[in-house]
Every structure is written in C-alpha cells, then in structure tokens.
Image (tube, rainbow, N blue to C red; front, side, top):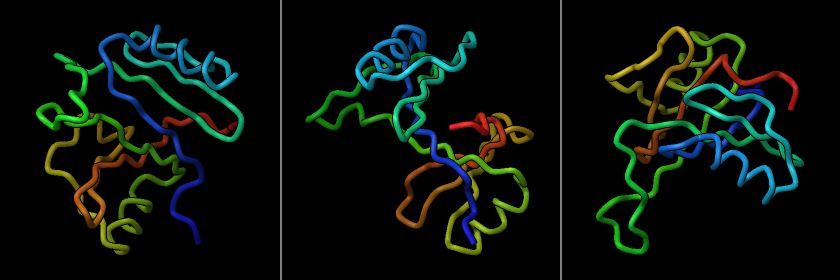
Length: 124
C-alpha cells in the first residue's frame, strides 16, 4: 500500500509568483493556485510549487556554502496515519513543525527533509 497519493516538488524562493510563472512556461504547464507565499504549477505528469522562504538566499552551486533548496511534498488524506506509516518505513519526525495541522516535516533515512501534507490539490 502506498503512503502518499501524489508528489509535489517544492522549490524554496524569495518570490513565488515569478518563479511559478517561469516553471509553468518552462514545462508547458499552468499555474493552478496562487497564494501570497506559494504558487502551484501543474505540468504534464507532475506538480511543482514555488514557496516563499524568509531570508531566502540562492544556492551557491557548485560551491556548497549555500546548499540546494528543494524538497518533496507528498499528498496524503490521513496525515496522522501517513506519518505513522512513514516512521514505520524508517522516516524520522522533525522537531520543528511550522504548520502541523496541514503538514508534517520528516527526514528520510539519509536525512533529506520531506513533507506529508493534506494541502495538495487532489486533481493532478
């Protein structure tokens, strides 16, 4: 049984609207929602979001002084059940939870952060 129903690739940024518009154009997709701090894009076979992060600094790749800033948002219908399933599979719940009623931040076994969330549109 799958824990998540959809994957939403999330890009941290300072200004979500122009980044969302860029990726919609790049991928031949469309903006499906816009909020002050987030823009969602649907493209063929994927969902992508641009999310505002306070004091955002662009990655300094290939130098790793400022690391890459991307994580997965996994759409679920039962947040508590999905967290329990993820932990059973080896995930670790993060100590800090900015919006626990909407999403939970976890780390995969290698330490990569990801979110389980009920806030992804059902239609992909």
